[in-house]
Amino acid sequence: MKAAEWLAATGAVLLAVLLGGVLFALLSLVTTVRRLRVTVERLQAETLAITDAMRDSLRDAEHEVDRVDALLTAAEGVGGRIDGASRLVTKTVTNPVVKVLAIGTGTKTAVQRMRSGERRATP
Image 1 (cartoon, rainbow, N blue to C red):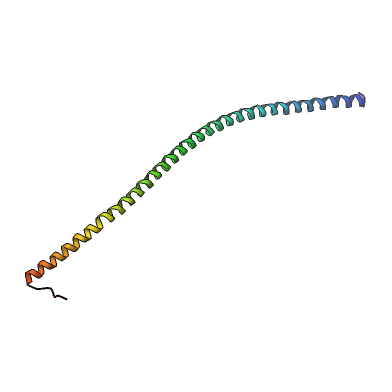
Image 2: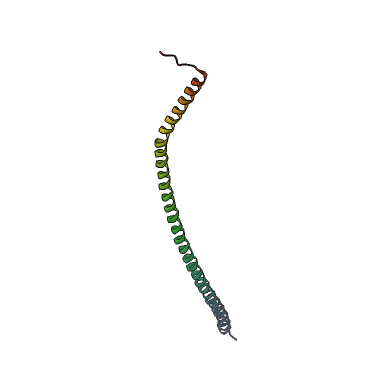
């Protein structure tokens, strides 16, 4: 065998080994890409489900915030009406009660003086 033939045979073997390695690498890459595609599809499905759940939760939270806001507004209105009613009762009841207490105190003092026979000094 001549050197040229020996080099050609060696080159062909090396080329076949190299081609086999490239084919193995390509098959491995294709398998990895397929697995990656499946993983991405699963991730996408899970992400969409989570996003839908978050959207529903957000809608529920907005509804609850609106309800709480309405309750607070109603409570503020009731508080304002109670304050107004309290002022009205204070103005309406306080003055007559003070007058009744003053009359009662004056009557009590007069009765005590009448019982003891004491007269009021004239100025």
